[in-house]
Image (cartoon, rainbow, N blue to C red; front, side):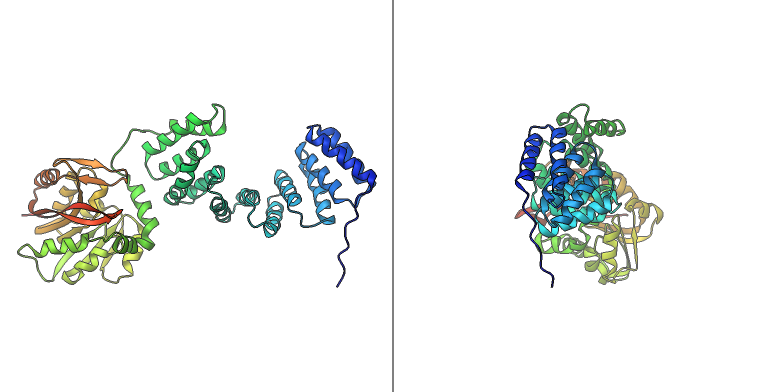
Length: 445
């Protein structure tokens, strides 16, 4: 085993030169600092401090490639110094040597696992290399270590949005947004995430906030102005966009059942079955049933014993994947419920819609489509959240809708459907409070 030889201490003359160079550097006289550091390196080529300081000055004065050479020499003389690796990674990045910068950052992180600058630099260079997934992982570590890193969070939100995960981006951004509410770049990227979800009003609000915070000539302000100009209708639309609904439920597909049944005590499927059993003419089996917004199949599982055929439709493909695992559906389809209803007239004995119409505003159009899709004597069993006003249709901050009983009755009458039952019930709990809904059964005469 070879012994590790200690680095020689700089001679008094070299020490004086280094001290003069550092004094000039702190005084922002970089030209003089460079001269002193060059002299020190020439007199003592084995002094890592001389080469490292020279490399930093060269990088700071717009000569990163020369800086890389000097810093690499310093690292070879005295390897594994975190501050020097930081300078080397920065110089490599400035030269466009992303691969080298990534390798240096990884060495830096091996020595200082908690270094936020190392992870930030690493993420930026991974992006330059076309490795967004690895960059996301690095940025997640940054915001986990320090949620106040708004610039890193803005980059992470943008990456997740571009990767098709805008709901995840918005979820991650909220804690940072509460701590650092005045970062224009974060509002810019939050606007992009909302726009990706089809929520133009929320996107416009985020971009307006960005403009209020950013300097008029900043890149963030320019991007926000361009985004606002390209937004056709920033006026509020209380009905959630289907893109938003699909992304939301795709995000929660894997833990949907646990969230609803175990944490929220979700009861809508059982309530629908009880409402059907309370009416005359409910067959014990042999029904062709369509499960609108089937999700993971919670309602389908309750009604499967009564079905001759059971079909499910949902906007979110990942929900359909979860429903398929139950093995109870004869047919499953990812798509818009109106498409299926319009395609198959007079087809279904029973249509169930558990907690589906809460993402629609006026129920008139969908009930007309249901009426066309039901066979004569066919029924719709559904739930909505109850609005405080009899005729009301209101949007909640959660982007869910609430409907009054009067609105339901009028929409059913207009669709030619008879209201067989309509009663309030607790659909689930939220924050330990009951969520009151309406359970109703309609029939095509």
